[in-house]
Length: 113
Length: 112
Image (cartoon, rainbow over all chains, first blue to last red):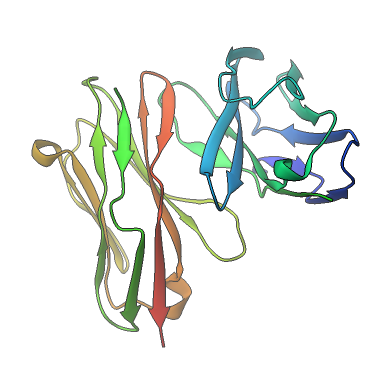
């Protein structure tokens, strides 16, 4: 069974550009999470979905960030416009149910110049 | 409120020493799950173990062992005979009420 798949693995962009990160959760998993990791702030939960519905987006930094989950096998995290302070590793993770184990994707390393 | 505390920010040990990583959690739920993850220098987050709140049996997997004690709300992780490949950041985590809470991580360096 394939794990959580994220693309791209690396992204370098210029300030002001739109960035779209993609995630395919493990098949059959009802929960999907987006995390951001930086040296300064550690791992932060940005948003999570249950059955494709956003449940808690209180961690989304500001309106420049948006996340969608159009179906059970795909989610996007979009930053528009991007800023240098958005540079981080963004992890997508999924979980089968309320009590299951959360599995993480390999992460997307984003650098905004 | 739910919370996971890893008081040890950084630990250094010499290869072959044993090392214990501490994790203390807080939750009001009676049903919850505890986890440990490893993040090696390559950056991925690797799942190590899951424990539910009703199972206080200690677990051993090779050189790894976990000590879960509800009385002290702790879920400590011991590496026996540490190796250089154990160098990583280790995160303790809690699932409670459907939410997932991470500790701040302990950075372990094993010196050859």
